[in-house]
Amino acid sequence: MSFSSDNTAAHNLHTLLSRVRNSTESTIAGSWSAVLEAEWGTLEFTRRHTEVVALLQLTMQQLVALPERQRIRCERHVSAWWYAVMQPVTNWMDETRLVRSIIDDDKLDHLESTADLISGHLVGSNAAPRSTDLEQMRSTCHEWVDLLTTMDETEISGPVRDQLISQLRHVIWLVDHAGTFGGARVAEEASTVIGSLAQASASVVNMQEESASRWKKAFLALVTACVVFNQASPIFQESITAGEQIVKEITSAIGDDR
Image (tube, rainbow, N blue to C red; front, side, top):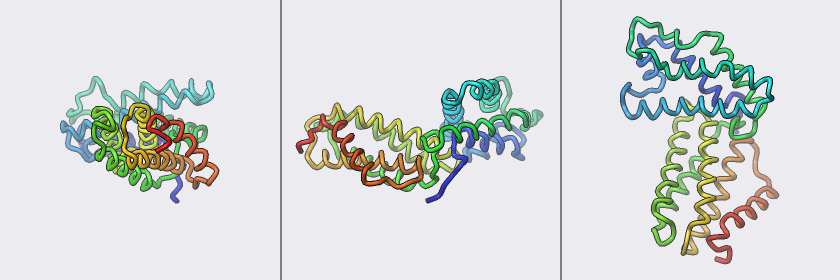
């Protein structure tokens, strides 16, 4: 299993901003397009740049978990990081403005230091996963999509099913682009999906026996994939047994006696 010590949202934000800042493109728009591998002004560019904003949002959220003195020191630089990502008063197509001016060395260094603090404080959680191997996560999400697409509205509400599928496909997309946005972004979104699936478990009705069995197994598989990715360690039998009990409780609405 591959291990990582720099897999936080802040680390990946630092990498992206560094690449944009050091780009040989003549404009900010061109630099971001090159780094994100998407044409400026397209839906795909918007999708990818929005994920950069999500990295900043996660970083801000994770700062709250730091000891107060560290948090306060780091928060002094958040506005500079936001400005670097958004460039709100700058013409992104201006060829006379140096791309390097989006952020100075000091603020960029503070971002990397913040990333190291988050990693040290939250390592092993979805904020700072230890592993870089996302194949189990990808496979499990595909299994969930296959399961949900076979269920009709007699078993699960159409809008609930469609929303779950869209969330799972987003996780798969993030896995495919983990080289750009990082594993922490995947782990965060996967955790959100687990919450959505847990809520959906209480609303499914008249589920067929085969679907109910697959649902329970798939739920445990996704939880396991997240834990293995975050902690970079195998799941021992005791944990599996405990997890199965939790799944039974969560999915009791779909009938444990099936």
